[in-house]
Length: 115
Image 1 (cartoon, rainbow, N blue to C red):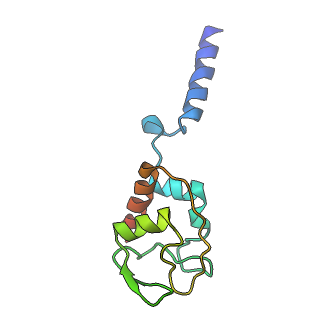
Image 2 (tube, rainbow, N blue to C red; image 1 turned 135 degrees about the vertical axis):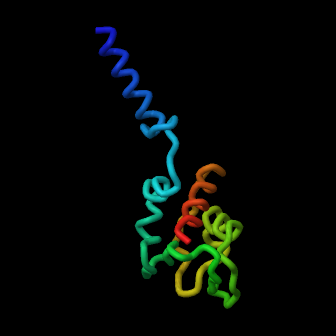
Image 3 (tube, rainbow, N blue to C red; image 1 turned 180 degrees about the vertical axis):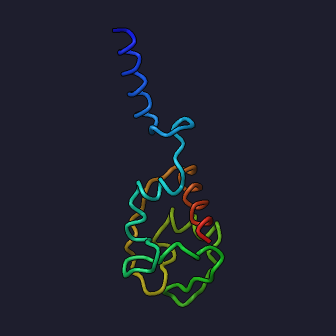
């Protein structure tokens, strides 16, 4: 009986810690999926949002006619303050999200990995 209780306890602890190996560590890709980012930021541009594929280091035209380079600072700002710089051709549709600095950095790193 004690063994069953210990197994049940370990299952609960794993579920509460995210259930991933390495102490509940979640990748940027998993986080983007879990937060719903990939519903709009798909593998190709959609009417809702630009793709993240090939974004990193590219020049992005904004709705006000200015351009910016998609680097860590721009991507971080776009995650933290999505209405600050709207990409040309897209409305201000991205919701503001309350993310930790660690979560934001994981998303930035994931977007960078997509090139």
